[in-house]
Length: 358
Image (cartoon, rainbow, N blue to C red):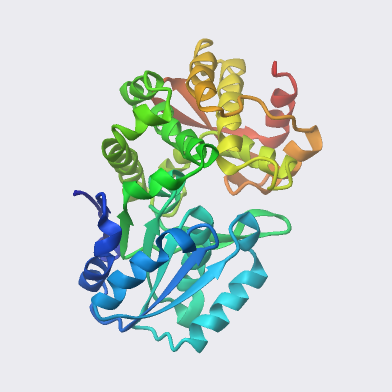
């Protein structure tokens, strides 16, 4: 087992990475939630038939009472109505403030269940068991939980750190190739912003099989990078913004596809390329760097461009949480493996995007 400790004082927790750890989840959760009698498990319609029974067996063997709720798979479940239904079912199950919520699934399940845990009964303990690559390397770590609103993605949420994150790399074997590639966009992002050697390592392994051969180490390295950033800036007011490389533009691409045509990973992939090109235009990013990112993304089937109108860019950038008044903080690369933050007027950013070669 590989273990990382996220040091946030009273909100500290461990990330445990091990094949087969899903079958030991009950004893691991018991160790961090000793007062809990009941666990409320949230999963989705894709994960339910694959892994819920194994988790349930482990939880009941550890002495927990368990209630499970399955939500429809997909971004549409991160909504106000689903959250309200979740609150009501948690209370109907007998959940108390000493009990806990468990998220079994990808980023949507983690975000929805985590926000419910942060708010029901003014907050109950929360455990993440991510089953997708994107959730394992990104969304399950750091405490950001949220739902979407009509105005945009993740606009209602909280910072609510889990008590424990359990990652079973075996769950990645059942992912469709497109879903696996989604996660690889975030994996490659870590190389771009923090570790050139890691980027080169990934670029030399352009297939799923090659990545899976080293998956435990890759998960650990990505989580270690995120851990160090979150420990420095838990509330996302400064250094943590570097984790959003590709996301400001990526959110525009998700919006352009009405959150249905393009997945989060696909949007971030194209967003990283666009951000790198912006950096070149602004004189910050070396000219060869966008091509390096494209070369790492393309073999995985990830897009390097996504059509997007000026009105969509304006809407997404106007709502971006890194904005402050008329300005926005953009994450750029001044070299491979090193991100920098640059504050720009939103109008200037939109003008620069309009001049980029696509």
